[in-house]
Length: 296
Image (cartoon, rainbow, N blue to C red; front, side, top):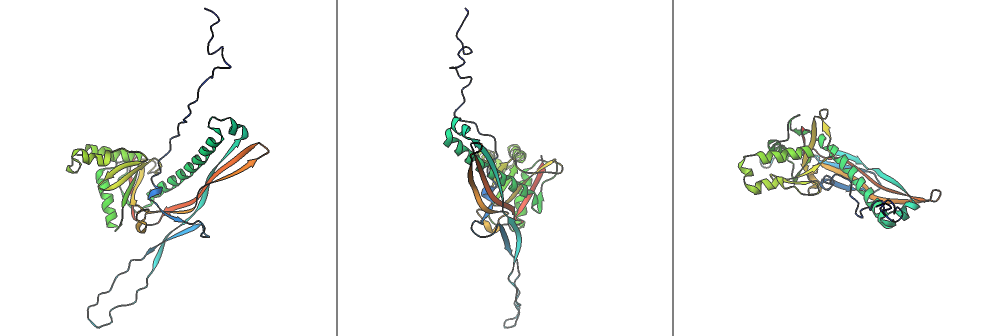
């Protein structure tokens, strides 16, 4: 039959598409390194540079004969291990008045997303900078072109014990390394992994970058780690949790300000500029850590 009424003929009263009210998020790495970092807040302290000193290890003298002068004066000293300078990062958006008033989220909804998104991107930049520090620890465990193994993991723990690193050990791995250690545990016939409880300690996949624990060491995963050996390998790390044990922290942050909003009206183009900025710096503040370099 001719002259049917269809979606095509009702172009002015039928929407071409219906947009979902909940908009999907883009893929972004979980924040895992920042909570494991020692933070020095510089806000209001008249400097953008943080210094991290360390006590020097001295030795006592033997007193072999009672009543004799056997001790000599020893100077108490600290050594500056690292200085970290905070610098600003940020993102700028320009939104027209038309966009404010015609988007499906509404003015308040769009503003909320712009602020949250800007803060999220600033924190992601912090994570990226922290991940680059894992390759700088003096002690290295692993071999180029060889998968991360349970033996490597145990060696990293032992090497940190040799360093007299005190406190809560944590491990941050590249996603390939996380896969390798899971596969190694799953394939292991060792008694320590016998039964479901042993396997769940490492194979329990949870959200927000947490992989599980192996030999009491929490493991986190990120895709932000650097490559090594002309991209043949990836670099993870094991270090002391700087938030839980700041005296032995491996990584440090100088924080000048947290993500903050700046907004200015542009009457000539009938729009607003919205900037979200953050000022920070990161660095290795001790050598209490191990570089884990294994196959990519």
